[in-house]
Image (cartoon, rainbow, N blue to C red; front, side):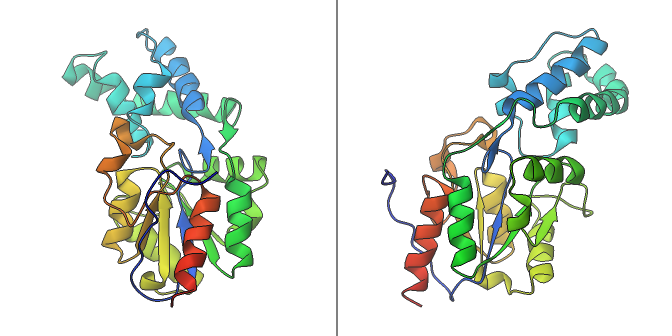
Length: 238
């Protein structure tokens, strides 16, 4: 299917690597988050959350997710007091169901295969805790595509800070300027741009509840396979 978006316009050198987000980009994990959070909220005697509420919070790490869910359910000071307890409960609940309520987005593996066949080195950089990210990639058979996997707890800072992107590029042995960052949210584009990378956005993820058109990237691609095609088109001109 042809993407209903203008073709991305890259500038810069030939690309040597792609750094790809996980939640909302490769795997739809919103129902997992919702189930884990509801397990936590039940133990806190708080009202349940929904996929719709949770989708607006995804992408900034577990700490942000917990704080966002607690905020409308507890008075501010009480929410802060219960944060550490809530985070520990959530991580235990999530560990029980990681991958149970997820699905792979269309053309993800085809896109990864095309990128790898084109000679791109691949990394997965996510704000999800590293062990949960690895488990999901292994569950869907995607782990072998990636030379590097960094989680939100792998480094001192997470996206939108450029540190994870720069670290992944360094571990891949490529220059940031020869790398494209692919994700579903403004955080991905911000991190990629701050690292000096090209950026692509997929339209089907979460983006903190904001319209995809608000993201400032080099283009919107309908899938990772379309991302691979856009990269190939750029390679042919450099």
